[in-house]
Image 1 (cartoon, rainbow, N blue to C red):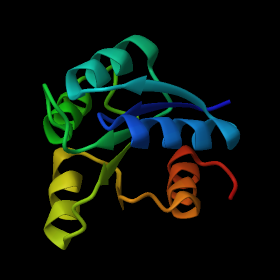
Image 2 (image 1 turned 180 degrees about the horizontal axis):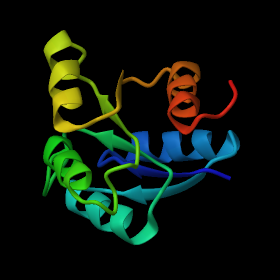
Image 3 (image 1 turned 90 degrees about the vertical axis):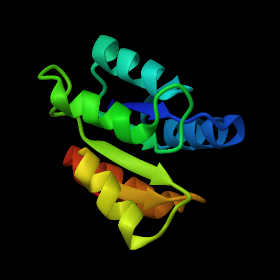
Length: 123
C-alpha cells in the first residue's frame, strides 16, 4: 500500500481528500502546516506528498524547497495542490521542486491519475 502525506490546512479539504484517498487504497498521513509536513516527511518517508501551497507557518513553496534540498527526502514526489490555476502558479510550483501540479477544487480521477503516474502504478 502506497503511503501519501497530505499537507493541507483546510479541515474540510483535508478530511474529504484523506477519506477519498483511503478508499482508493492509499495509506494517508496528514499535516496541517508546511513545517509539520517537512517534519512528517522526514520521519515517515512517504511514497508521495500532496502539498497545498498556501499554508501557515511555512508555505508549500518553502516546504517543498526544503524537502527537495534534503538528501533524505529529495526523491519523494511532490504534487502541488492549489486554488491558483494560472500558468505562473504552475511554473512557480515546479520551480520550487514540485514534480506535478493540480488545482482545487480537486478532480479526484485526474489527481489519482497524477498520483499513480508519479508512483509508477497502473491506471
